[in-house]
Image 1: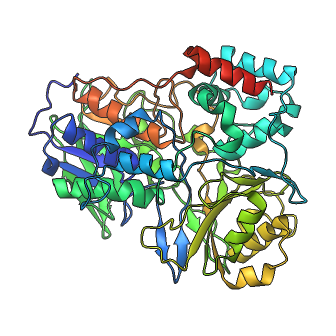
Image 2 (image 1 turned 120 degrees about the vertical axis):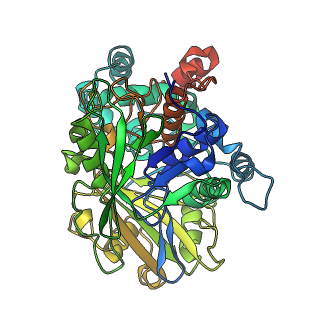
Image 3 (image 1 turned 180 degrees about the vertical axis):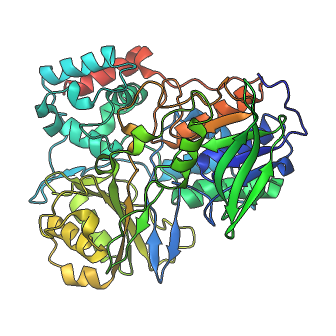
Length: 525
């Protein structure tokens, strides 16, 4: 497709998240574009997008979310095998993940907890034949039915099963989420079903995903010569007035001034469409996260592009119902190991070896996870960090009679301790700093949508424009994963620059008899 691109072409990557950084990597390694010809334009002073981490021991640490991985993230690992984990090490980022997971193996022994802090038996998924029939119907008939909700396929009783409680807390699907996305997830992770209640087969990074993925990747790109322009908001793209468009300019705002970056037909523009963490707000131990300002620049840019370029998608369907797409997460920094010791005692899991601990009768549907420590690369030995979130942030708390979105860090921590039934509440509060984050669009990629709401990474409507990120259409793979962002970048670069390499196939365990049989046995337990 790309007849006008060559070694002198310039590439502009809009956004500093994992999709844009990955696009820059593939442009260098596989499209052979000189690194100095690649510019990354990011609104914030730091890169990383959703894969963020900030703070220090004094003010407290913050990560808006966490990511799980598994061995079939083939595009991500194809990239990370060529990214040094540290500039002073011969170890790749891929190898560090593999070695870490050999040492710290996932084997959750306490996934679901009731209101009395009793572990729920999750050895059986609790699925009836009616539920299994509905699941079969979903797998057979939901493909392409992107406007259908999960609740259109399943009876109400399904949403009280052990299986659904494990699934919804792990992946954040809700009853109103897109049924076709659930179908994709069932197939994409079919190999995990036998040990899903224990998080068997789940991989994690040594540190948070900023320190483990973003920092090594951006260091590699910087040292290669890629140009980074931070605190730069892309407001609009301009196009040639032709039947087949091409981008001829990028309007940016920085330091309060408007500038225009000229783009030739032999240059390429890669835009990360939308953002799950756009318009996020942060609170503190004493203040709730403020109400977000909507919709945010990434969504405004996408809407502007969609009005100029045919088949560029429809951002509105993902952001028009914040009550269905919002979360509150919280990061807790502690100066005493006592809380971690209490959790280890009731779960029989050392930090980093368990999964989410989910309080299924909580009004906010709370879950927490204790990471392997240190979770931040520069975290001192006398600090301990864990993370949690509420899947129903507009519900009323059981102790704190407020919506979670209206609560400060202390109130969220008190609600959590209420469900944990610990006697040491005052002591735990004295050495804890809980920082809440409100994210209005965090599960927006799961919303029911029209068939054309997600554009292809490369469109025939514009000769030098490509799209990346969680809101493009990729066959068979699943959103809300790092793999999806990396695959979108690989697909965009390979298609636009006509790279003569094959994109790795999405793993399809349903065609492996042993995998399929083990999954069926697990569902019948």
